[in-house]
Image (cartoon, helix red, strand yellow):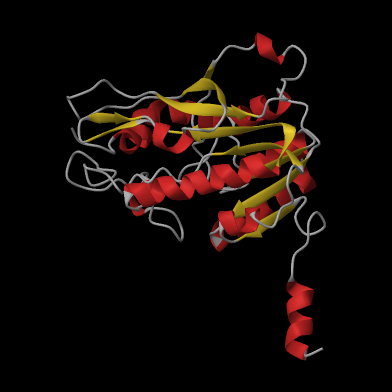
Length: 288
């Protein structure tokens, strides 16, 4: 056996040893393809929204300049969030297909996305989720800002598609929770579009899952929630910067029992004052 071949074998990742409770830095679809059929319980993610591919030229200030707080104006660390729409839909459907393949017959995928107006029409992501077993749509009500576009009312929510296999059931008494969830955005996170950890806590604790995967892990919120709730995780992200950030965040949590990105009471007061300016760019992503 050649040295080159030996090296290749040494670096090849195998499931579950090299996947469970690990952050995998690379292409989501390619990594998902390496996971066996029907091997995981739960998936949660919020993918890049393709915001820069907009009839309104992406996120805008509305006053002619850029705001320092609008991190998504510059895109993600190694991905500028700007694909031709058909290519974006094809990519997301590939992710959904792989996720549904690796989920057990009792599994479910909580897929968070954002509806928006494109060329005067609502873009409701049906072209992505069509054909998949969407059992319920959960409304994630978050903070609002100011909408500079006079053609429609201020958006204040995102949607979570609960894409469930036939055998999926919620944990006992979890079905008492309604389908409109109110959680503020994560304001102290270094990632430009982070989940609030309370939202992930709600999802995981509403299931009986023992394993969860997030194919667009970002700052590792899903992993941190999994560890809090004592289940296993797999985190995937293409950006080395975010993989490093997630590892450091989880390491800090294991060491101190605290999440460095969680707001203190002092910072919560600050958020109430800054909320409009911090969230304004989030709603300036399309023109009529």
